[in-house]
Length: 526
Figure 1 (tube, helix red, strand yellow):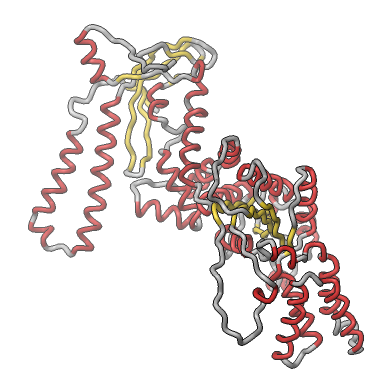
Figure 2: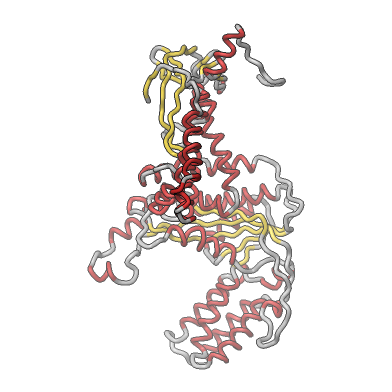
């Protein structure tokens, strides 16, 4: 930042006019008539960007020096006086521009620039729009790719290190955004009558210092041999589990077990399955599973504060998550069924079928279908006893019947969460497809790229930005984020959080000729 005397620019738009004239002159030239349309588009894109930069610069020049038209007081209440004009660089999406504005200071106090507040300029070099583009690119693809995309499609140049820093800053208001939104009433008469809460987990490879303590100790104890590094499991003890959550509403979809598993070979017309509505998804590495489940209940309560909907929780069988759900539902006196994903159950049954009927795939299919139908009818415990008895009657060895015993144990242990007959009769979902897809899209597809190893802060920021985009909240969040940036970077530095109004040199000149300068306030403005 440099201190310069503030001199009004005679014609701020002269350079922009010249840039526009250069474009039209080129398009009229014989040279342009020889260029293929693709080359012409690329040349015009570069010229357009420079024209936009000149226009932005002209407008900023027009608004200098940003002299205050009312007293300037810092947060401590000290009245500041004009010092000199300072010029700073701003990296915009069109390229670098300069902003000249009047500084106000006092003895032993840093200078304040009211025009910075009026423009809501960021504290660092990069404009808020550049930061928004960085956030979007970081949520979509690798940082290296985002740096290249930004450079190709805008006039901004952001080195990778600064790119990563901007990503972290862009996501800093994630929790405050949703907390603020949850304080407002939500009118949702058209949302479905079923409110679904679903949670899962997905591992992300982190740097050793950011692993959880137990994982870090296990990684340190692992023998680092040549075969260990090259063999399967070479990323063992390298991941930290991200807790993934989703909340959505859906219409009831009443079905019978026979409709879920129709008789094979019989064609039938599938009813239209209702789709999730107003889905919010997110994931966190920094917060514990309990904290994420608690946040999930807060989001659900925001959607249904009077508890008029039917709440249901879908899980894949993780005991810790089930315990959190039970405790939080009990604290809130919620009658909320917890349902274990039917697809997970089917996988266990299939493994048991392969052990009992190893050769005949047709018989396996019939056996699995018959037993899954019984489970859907609410008879999981009876199925468990039956398949264990079948293994005993076949005199299967312990190793041979391991899959059968695993299936039976699973059915017995999770029997309270396998009451599919009641759940289907109420029209509630029985599969965790939404959260499974969220784990894949939100976490796996971006975070576990080949060779990626994240810092905790960087990974958490990217997960937040991806969650905002997946939940269709990014635009609303960014508006909130810019408001928070204004409060942090500007309003907080002035008395009563009031950034003084400013006036340009051109307007000052007009007003001085009139001989008076008055502050006009709108009705009701303090």
